Image 1 (tube, helix red, strand yellow):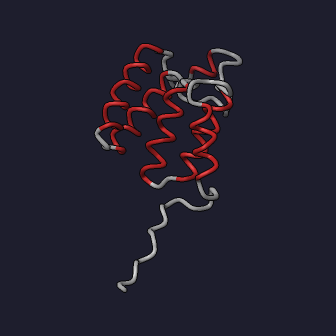
Image 2: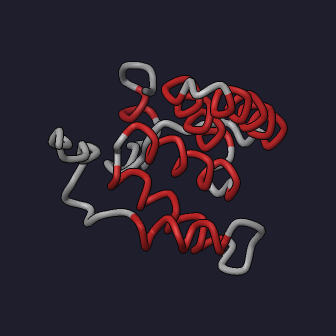
Length: 127
C-alpha cells in the first residue's frame, strides 16, 4: 500500500479496488517447482506435490504441465472439483498438447464436480 497521505499529494494515485498482489514472472522457478512436484508425485506425497505445482502456477500462471500435474495430484487426494478445474485449464491452454488425451480421459472418469471426496468402495460380503 502507498505511504500515508500519498494519494493527497499525487492526484489520481488511488489504487483501483480490483488491484491484487503481483507475483514475479519467473518461468525458470516455475519449471523447477514442477520438477520437484513430479518427484513428490512419484513418491505419492500428494500434498507436497500439490504445494509445488501451486507454487509453479504463482510464478507462471499458464504453465500447462503444472496445471495437468496439479490435476493429477488433486485427483489422488479426492479433490474432484480442483482436479477437474486443472484438467480443463490444461486443455484450454494446450487442446492438442502432450497430455490432452490423458486429461480428457480423466475428465470422463471424474464424477460430477459437486463431490469433493473419493467414494469408498462398498464393503464386500463374505460368502
